[in-house]
Length: 361
Image (tube, rainbow, N blue to C red):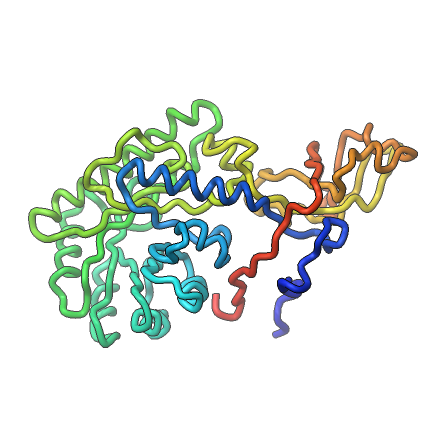
């Protein structure tokens, strides 16, 4: 089987100096906006009296991880072991692999466990049994709690949830790191009354974490209680319950038009664009053709805007073609149409190496 086709990595020496040098379609970022988003979430966590454990899965870059952790390179969340290895290789510590781990991943996870402070997550007794005897030191384990999303995590009302926490705390092969919840159902909130609709999943998440914590605390110590998603952490309550010690949003470092629709951010907070060039102009059809398929923007829905390759207005760029009068833009994939062009200024992009270990995902 041949390896997937991918563009070569951009090195510091080969980083383009101007928009016109970029091969399109490509992904670009506004570094100043990324820095502002990172600083704002760090400050928000501080005001709420909790530790920020930012998720790395959106940007998958060392530089983004440094900004998100305020330069400490500690206390992060990942969604694949490839990401965990990528950050551990760069000197990051206190890494939480926030997916219920399975037996075939244990040998690889054990290597991370031996070399740095590394946490795994479980939500089932069999996973706890598989963990014992697989490492030279006790595993640090978060118990995942379902806060209403219905994807993973133990049931708050089920008595066996507390029993599972007790097993993690009492076993010689494990150490209870704390409780982990993810308010993924906050993404179901619509733009209409999204502030009110976000309060429900946010409140359920906090209540779930607080409920399991209170039931566990009478029997054992629960060092960490982590909550959050980008929508709920971007619109948090004025104060977290005292039991909550961490929050773990991820998308906030870039944001996107989906987050804007949910009320998580404004358009000015969106830090990334997909750059594409106009490769055809058809005045009679009132159409522009760009060199980007629609999946380059999103595979999840119409959450994207197309980007021009110049800092000049399109009408001035090609005055004879009348491009400035065109209302529709069509991509090279399936005739998808868009109405928006974002005009890009020059010298705004940067080269960050991403975690792309495809063979290990």
